[in-house]
Length: 143
Picture 1 (tube, helix red, strand yellow):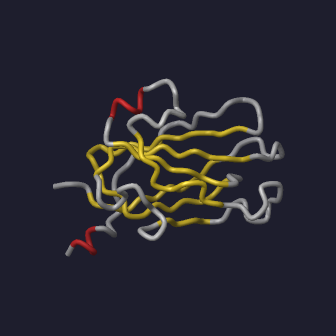
Picture 2: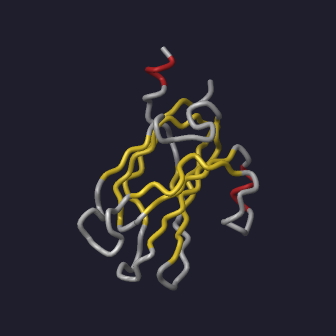
């Protein structure tokens, strides 16, 4: 029964992206859950992001800290996953990606998180913005 539950789509809210105006940059975007949720899979369509890191927190206060790079209260569940073969080429810039139990670490699938923070890395100055679209998350909200 647990395996079937882990495949359920979970309700989430995608917050506005935060990105410095200069390029290249590291942009961030938060995803919040109405209730603590065990995350088993994350899927999305890339939009010119070379690589991505995803951190998760069990502490709602961590969302409000001004230093978005601080690791305090956050665990890394996906580190520098490559999304584009070449950050300067458009060829693989808009592919769909899915990360599940084999790629997600740091308690993903076991611990219940209240939010995720995505870090979008794009070293090329060629693209005006980077990020992901169509975010889908599967997991188990607690009863």
